Length: 224
Image (cartoon, rainbow, N blue to C red; front, side, top):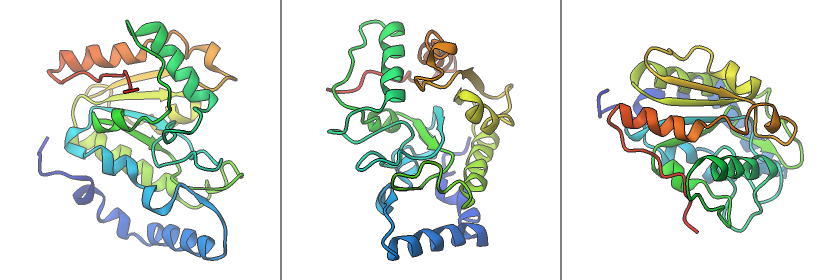
């Protein structure tokens, strides 16, 4: 992979497509009308800011952002420090505790440290209206995030895709299994975690694959 490739160079044309400009316009209008949109405008593309394309190692796909106050900050499954981890994130931590030796449950839910190590925490839809889950699924974000998966698949080698639940599995269906590792499991939601998420061992499998391909492993332990 060329180190000259960046999110900006790979997605520049996509971000100038009429549909993408319309998404931004619609969200701006909603904000002007007094609608509360999460995450904050400055945080919408945090996943790309914190995980440069050249440093990418792992992709974890979520759905739409948390719709509660102060929860969403642009990283799938993550919440800012000081905000109680939602149930799915609590279950992610439990899986880590059960499968990673000496893993200590963190006292916060901020996954920024993973992002800085090369874990792209990508939601399929990047915004949501306060209190209204999946309210922005019709805006067109999926087309953009499909393009993100496409450029990773095409221009990278040896990336681990963690696909949790049917929605994520569909999102990653076109990933080339000969170039990348695709790990599938149930979603960590309380409704499905016992149906295949707990015990999936994805975090160890990811590190084994990265190590085998000469890459630094992810330290899943979050700083306390």
